[in-house]
Image 1 (spheres, rainbow, N blue to C red):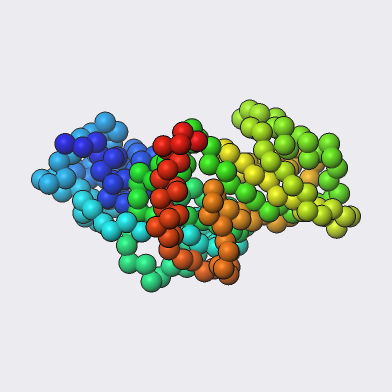
Image 2: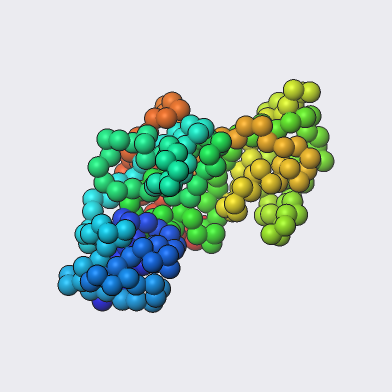
Amino acid sequence: MERLHKFLAHAGVASRRHSEELIAAGRVTVNGRVVTELGCSVDPQRDEIRVDGELINEKEDKVYLVLNKPKGYLSTVSDPYRRPTVLDLIPDIKERVYPVGRLDFDTEGLLLLTNDGELANLLTHPRYQIPKTYRVEVRGVIDEESLDKLSRGVELEDGRTAEAEVELLSSDPRGSVFLLTLREGRKREVKRMCEAVGHPVLALKRISIGDINLEGLRSGDYRRLTREEIKKLRQIKKGGR
């Protein structure tokens, strides 16, 4: 027997956290019955498990992708308003994959996609503090005081942000550009931090997650992660980062 949300993650449906959301929303059935209890256990060898009516097999080949997401795409599997999603950019991938974390509709850059629920859970868990670096363009000439605030932490409505790494690239009356590396993943965190110091974001691009970057990837392109890259991601947990 296996917990339902863990089975969905292992089968590549979604991360554990998102699998719990699918169950709570009543989108999962076991032997024809809608199940909303998060603690429900199933026998994958005997039970018929479906998500939105689609039968879920126990295992799929694991797929690991890095995508250079353009602006104008949602970081979701589907959208009720038929807006374009990042899955529209990977039509050649037959396995069911989903984004690891999210980038806003108007944010571009590095996005990982996989059907490995365990790895997705690892990459999004705040305990491991995986560094994510963004190229940020903001309005106005940003001064040392504002950069120092971003580095030391900014007070937001949901609490003070963690310390960050900041590297100024350019600054003039047309705007300022800097690199910002975070180790937490709050919703719209970069944009809210910059607004808090008086410099609204004009453009935002994620350029790396851990050791994975966008080298060689044009906007809208993707590639499969190498074995070495996957190995390094899995070692994060062992390293306690």
